[in-house]
Length: 595
Image 1 (cartoon, rainbow, N blue to C red):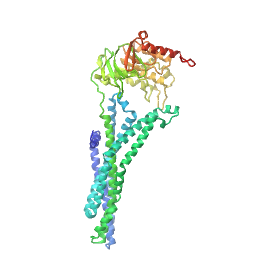
Image 2 (image 1 turned 135 degrees about the horizontal axis):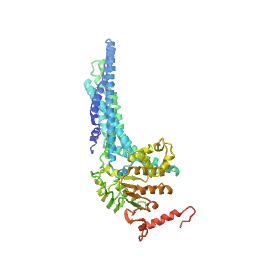
Image 3 (image 1 turned 45 degrees about the horizontal axis):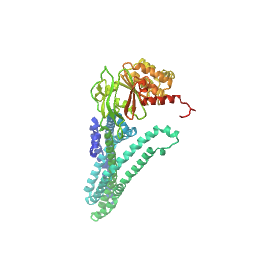
């Protein structure tokens, strides 16, 4: 959507069957505006009766009562019709908001993980929550008000000219000038400032989320919000853009306010000039009273239109940001299925570079992780170990070469089939605020309680269940118990074991395990390797010592490959140096001299 004027239509595309309700609501809103305006006329007719009685005519009290009742009835009818239109618009607006949110969430599910690095959670949360809420607010309230105020304005202009064009024409000219000033106030420059303001708001949301996540570190080191430069800069940027947005509207807003609040500067001279030609004082007074009643109503209507247009501009900007997600290119998926007989993972001359990075994270890497064997990947931080795992899972897509599982290129495989064949444990796994049973069953919904208990046993989690009276039914997280990092890691391993996928990826799966538990987990892994492809990423070299194959990564390049013993005896072996350093660290304790 490149054209701003198409974005309201774009919002309506998500209304589905409720679009008819919105159309009906707009029509009813326009009708209600007519009924709500009629009391102004009836009050004028009542005032006219009073003026005539002041001029010597007899006062007809029944006529005054008639106009009073007519005013009350038409006002009530207008309010009832408006209330019905509001009910219809709210139903349609909530449906539209739900449809937009569902479309965004479904689209995000098809995006690669790399997309979320460029679009952090704070930004996405704001778009999904706040921007979709702005579209709902516009459809439920402002769209109806815009229709009713426009109908009211047209009727007021018509009545101004019909009753006495000599007075109505200059007043109409004044209000038309005010109406035109709105276009200056809501011009392209203002829209650009609004976009910058929204960008700054999104950035501040993201930095606030990151700040809250790291609050423990901030408190431990005695820092403050000002000490976190990115968060502080985001706040300053938001403040600056909010001020620029406000100042951009200043001149137009002052001029507009001055015009719509000065009808009497035009009304009184025009009425006095026309009064010289009036047949009687009563006639002059009647005409003057009519415009005294109508002019403030026109000022209020113009002011409402200005705010409604501002809300419309916000809704358009919100839809533009929503479309930034919806129109982003999703990750393509094929229709192929992975072979059930062979689950070798083969990298063939694979390269990948992160966006805006100066060097590739993975550079022409080729290796084979064979079925039924454990392939370990080691290397210094930033060497590309976790990136290799991410490429297998299609969190990112390799730019060169190919990755196959069972001889099938993973880019041609159905996403669901790919995930069905892979179980993985991240370095920092996440558990849901639910029971332990539900968390473990997340990998396989149809698992029985006995199968879950078996997975718990294999993952060495028996001690976790033993310390909680409710066992598998223990709720973790909010309103429940909390687990240590190592316990969370083992529950995640149990989840992967239960899935029983032919390919298992472990990214620092024993990072939080103590030596005793690490040995037990390694025993569990040995049982899992039979007939499975296991890829293990580790910093702790003791956890990969018995792997069938060890890959050594350095700056995105695969520099060594072999078993533990083979790598130790290779000339100029980087792995041998890493192993020596690891052995030295295991012997170190407080009080040792650093040599």
